[in-house]
Structures are given as C-alpha cells and as structure tokens.
Amino acid sequence: MSRLTSSAEPVCLRDALAGAIVRGAVDVLASAVCCDSRDCRPGDVFVAVRGEQADGHNHIHDAISRGACCVVVEKAVEVSVPVCVVPDTREALGQLCQALAGYPSRKLRVIGVTGTNGKTTTTHLIASILEAAGYRAGMLGTLGYSDGFELSPAELTTPSASVIAHWMRRMVESGCTHCVMEVSSHAIAQRRIAGIELAAACLTNLQRDHLDYHPTLKHYHQTKSRIFELLSPAGLAVINADDAASREYMPLVPHGVLTVGMHAAANVTAQLLEREKSEQTFLITAGEMTAVARTAMIGDHHIQNVLVAAAVGLAEEIDLATIVRGVEEVRRVNGRLERIECGQSFGVYVDYAHTPDALARSLDTLSEVTAGRLICVFGAGGNRDVAKRPLMGRAVAERAHVAIVTTDNPRHEDPRQIAAGVMAGFETPSAARYVPDRAEAIQYALSIAGPDDCVLIAGRGHEAIQKVADEQISLDDREVARRWLYNLQPVSPYGPLAGVANS
Image 1 (cartoon, rainbow, N blue to C red):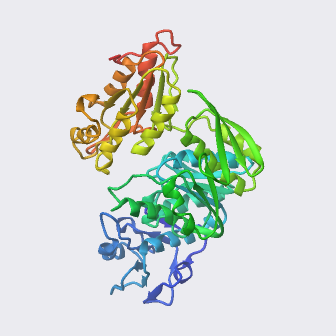
Image 2: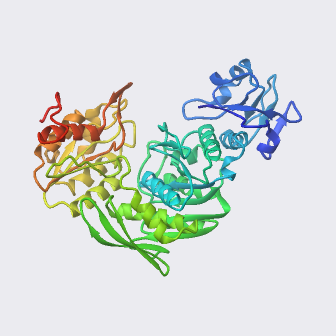
C-alpha cells in the first residue's frame, strides 16, 4: 500500500508538516497521499521518497501527469503544481499519513518493541497481558497485522508508513486501547514510524544482524537505540539489563527507564525454579511484589522476553497476578522454539533463530532438557550478512552433537556457496553433514533421532514460503516434520500419510 486517503476532512500541509516551505500556493489541502508515482490519482499529494532502489524525485513528472496536485520534495523544483519542501521526505510521509488517518496513534497507547531477537514473542506477551487486564490491543509484527478482530498476513515486520496509519486507524475504529508493534532497524532507518509517539519503547537485546543493510555493527545498534527518540514526554523505556550492548544506551534515554534481568541488577527480575522440555517455572520479582509464572515456552531468553512484557504491564498499572495470567496464556508463538508433538520419543522444535546469538540461546536451552543427542538442522539466508555465516556454524558446532547444514532462503545466491560459508565455522568440514534439500534434511534428522534425543530445526520458524531465486516454494518446516512424524507412528489417529518419505 503506497497510497492513503483521509478518514475525514482534508489536511493542511502546513499544519501536518511543521516547518515545511510551500511554494506555488498559500497552502495545500491533502485528501490523499501517495509515494509511488504509478499509484497516483487525481488530487493526490505525491511524496518523493528516496529509497534503496529508486528515488521518488526522479518520478515527480510522472506523478503530476497522473494527477498529483502537489509534490513534497527535499529540494525545490520547477513544476506546474505547488511544491512543499521538507528536510526529509521519509519523515514527512510518516507525519502526513498519521495526519490523514486522524492521528490514530494519539488515541492509542502505542508500545514499540525493538531488538535483534525476541521482538515477536515479546509483542505477543504484551498484547496478552493487556487483554488479561481487560484492554483491547491491536498488533503489527512479523506474524501479521491485527485491529483487535481481524488478522492479516504481514509483508514486513514493520510495514510502510501508510500501512501503519491504515491499521492504527482500524484499531481506533475497532475500539482498541493499545497498539503493540515490532519496530525493525530498517523501519527506524527509513522513518516508517515517523509521526508516532510511543507510550513505551522496549529494547530486548542488541546482537549481530542485518549487516547487509547497516554499514557497521555500531551503526545497527545506534539505529535500534533511536526508538527512544519516539517516546512521548511521559513515555517509558524498558531495557534488558542482562544485555551489555543494550545497557550502553540507557544514559541516552530522555525519559524514565525500567530495567529487567535474570542476572544483572534490575527493577524487574526473575529466578528460574524448574525447567522441563514442555514447560518452565520461574519467580518474577518487582520491588516487594513476587509471583510464580509457569510457561509452556522455555529458555532464559523467553524469561527475559516475559520480563520486558511484565515491565510494560507494570507501567500500565496492571497488577502482577494479572500480568502472570496474561503471560501464561501464551502457550506458543508460531516458529519461536515451537514444540512439535506427534507422539514421538524424542524432542522436536522449530525456531526462527537465524543469528549466531539466537542459535546459541536455543541450543543452550534445549541442551538443558535433553538427555540424549542434540541434532540441529539449519542454514543461512542468501543476499544477507555473509560474515555471520561462519559464526552461525561455530555456534552449532560448539553445542550440537549432530549438525546438518541445509538450504534456508537462498534468494539469488548459490545455496552451495552459502553452505560453504556456514561450514567454515566448523573445525573440519566433515563435522557437518550437507543436505541441500531442506525437506530431506529435516526428514533425515528425524530419521536418525533416538529416544531422549532432540532435533532443532532452525532458521525459518513460521515461514511457509521458501525463496529460491525468483521462485516462491511452499515449504513449512513444521508441516514437513509433522507429516514425517505421523507417518512414522502408524498408531496415530491421523493414519499414515501417503507420499512422505521416511529417509
């Protein structure tokens, strides 16, 4: 969606874009905004956005030929329609979209969650806590966009400014009190969330990722930390004190900070009491308040996500007992260390882990609850950070008893070259088995697993489409595993499934 129409009265550009210089008119009334000239309609305001692949300034004349009544640019141009000059058109697009949607973010308490790992789970936990307290929360994130009633598939973790404004408007119309959204580093860098004030900004952790987009690790971390600039005057930051890189940005937060942690001193802490393969129990402490929580999702990383969500709940003045109830309601999040249970005698988990840190965390967690061998099926995405591939290989080499390297989403790279990069993290190439076909790799891992072993299928999590060159192939790791496991168990009420190989 590159075009957004007004929900009510037209918007004055001078009001929506403070400090903008309008030439060729006293002011311009905007009823619709567009940032793709091909989608322009008569009467639209065209915002010339500088993107990664194209610059909207090169398509101004096309937009005008299609009926644009005004162009928003970063440098004055001589054209036949009024021109609005702003310092940053990406920022202007976000502000204008929010204005046209009736400033829905001002009618919602917006909670933004960023970080390398844990964003999706944390947003689901926060939403569940809010709902347990009687609120209605909309969501924007990797697993979809929701207005509190209807859920639609997500194209991006954090969508474009127009899509954000569209869904926030729907949330207001649906009676939502809150919006909980994942905020990616790309979205911050590209100003997709401009014009939004956050009631809370959460930082789960800062590790290594997206260095195909960000020039350096420091730049990536600094970009993430800019989420705090979007806090409202009364807004609150929530930071994971267990994460050293996140702690560095605490002095830069202009408002109040709530810290969370299992190991570091923090405002909200947790102590693990018991962990099994299907659940864990831990004690949450906030000041003089304590409560025991039992979650079906396991791992220290999950407890840290719970603590971030709990801190948001406390900031929203929700009592700890209700917070725990909301946390315990989240029994699974698609593809986030999701347990596949088909009656087999060994553990099977599917996880979205696609960074060295996330892989290490998931494997460390499973090693605690696995009496036998730890078998890991994984790969690395194509057209992404090349330097992290051997680091992923090393994380698995140091933790798994059996490593099976396979294809992830190769996109436009040769899968064999990607695999070679991953296997460079092993001391010897023979320490890992390479099975190019991902479905075959999963089936092989399951076929060699014995009682008390555990299989981790990592990298793609919830994804149901594998991207190979220009093709999109239907492939869901969870379904591949389930079909094989049910065929393995003839006593299953589902019966044997034809056409599924057991080797």
